[in-house]
Amino acid sequence: MGYSSIGTPGFLHGIWTAYKRFGSGRISWQDLLQPSANLLERGYPVSADFVAAVQSRVHEIIAERSMNPAYDTLTEGVILRDPVHSNFLRRLSTAADAIELFYRGEIANQIVYEMKHRGGLLTKADMAGYEARIEPPHSTTLPNGYTIKGPASQSSFIAIGLIVEIMMGLTIRAEKRNVTESNAPARLGGSFVGTEPKRIASSGLRLQRRRRSVC
Image (cartoon, rainbow, N blue to C red; front, side, top):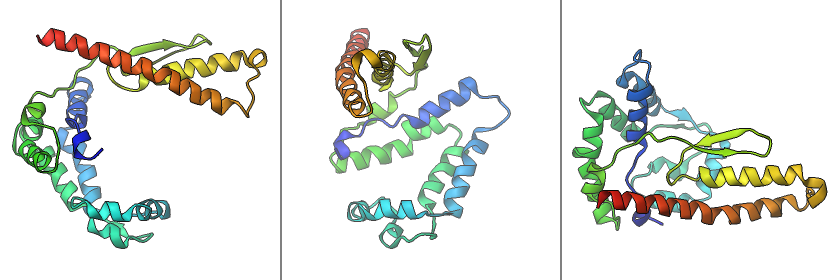
């Protein structure tokens, strides 16, 4: 865990790719990001559940310099603002090329600098070489004939699809296999354990193929 576990941030490139590929063209990139920037600047009242969650790990949170110092004295109903994040979104929304700024420009340099000085492994080459790709979804056919689809590559959907398939099969054969409320959780846990190696193996196979294509 920690900085050494952080990979290239792909969310921005993902929403940018989706916006350019599937956007209606009726809303600008700036208009897409501004509402979130405005909310962070204006602030929002925090709930009791949010306060409880923060207080349960408050010492870890306030030890991280990038976190809001207000978390130390947070109470229900307080208006929580994040001007730093708001400014970040405004920069992305008004930049001539948000992807260039984030992955190869000033923001990329800031990210790599912090990673280098805090034990991270992310490099400038990692940032500059990142791109979101649109791939065909992975499909899983369930025992009832329905087909569920989700992201392939190294996502968890492959495991989730297998888990749903296993659990539906157990439900259909409940009488024969004596699946009751008492042992269903154990079977669900077993399905998680059984599918995770398959997901890892699938991810490893795709990684090997990518390496070969690069070579």
